[in-house]
Image (tube, rainbow, N blue to C red; front, side, top):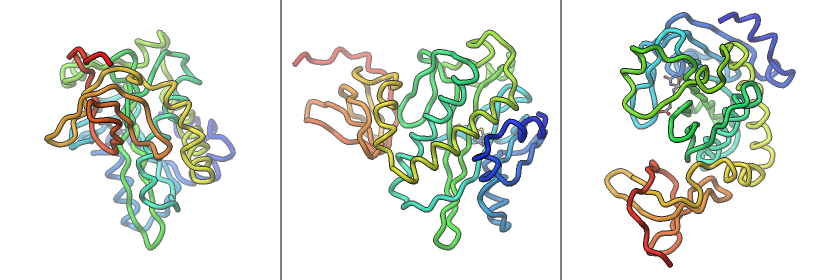
Amino acid sequence: MDKQQLVDSFSAEAKLQIADVEVFSNIDSTNSEALRKLKAGQKAGFLVVAREQSNGRGRRGRAWVSSLDSGLYMSVVLPFGRSVENLQALSLVTALAVHSGITKSYPVPVQLKWPNDILAGNKKLAGILLERQQIDEISAIVFGIGVNISLSDSAQNLIDRPFTDLNTLAKVEVDPANLCAAISNQLVEDVNRFCEQGFEQFKQRWNELDRYKDEDIIIEMGNSKLIGKSLGVNGDGCLTLQSAAGVEVISSGEIFPSLRPQPKD
Ligand code: BTN
């Protein structure tokens, strides 16, 4: 990936807030590298990108398959002044930014899966891993973003869930530097808006793009499961679920489509 091309495609806002960009051929994980840089004293406001990750990390302790030039592997680090309770909503805002960054550059039909997966149909196109580092009273947030671009056969064999890639969806050769800049620009803009005005302004758009809204789903939360109809997200970024017991408000968990017919009301 060409660093100059990437920086040249930054918006004025992104140029202001992302002061440093480092592009690696190979790294263990762009998130881990970003956290190391913060620990070593680098100020939030930078971007780490890699062509390959030897230890790409996903949510819930899973691995993120990151073979050479198969995807975009990036971590944007921004300061975050708001309270930590807003992190739930911030992760949803990140999903919207990644969605817009992708679809503004490549108009493909993609949707969101709560809390922050990007899907095409039922197949995963991109994932997000947010990590936080506290330095005095300022939090630095590492926005780790992985987008499947062109999965090799060997990479495909390593993924144990339905997936797709952007080359297949867009039917054109995707330029990772342009995609990285488009996502960075959108992320900086949306995080600034979120910090100024909160999540409420993003809620409607999120619910319009939600793959599972109004569908019967199962939510797994640790060892427990809830079954019901998804009512979409509320103003805090929590998922609301119509279950047999009433409306439940869920702040963490993983959605699975329900195959069980739900009782009619
Ligand atoms: C998920 O499980 O859906 C989240 C995947 C996040 C992967 C990205 S790739 C860039 C950054 N570095 C990592 O190690 N993980 C994130």
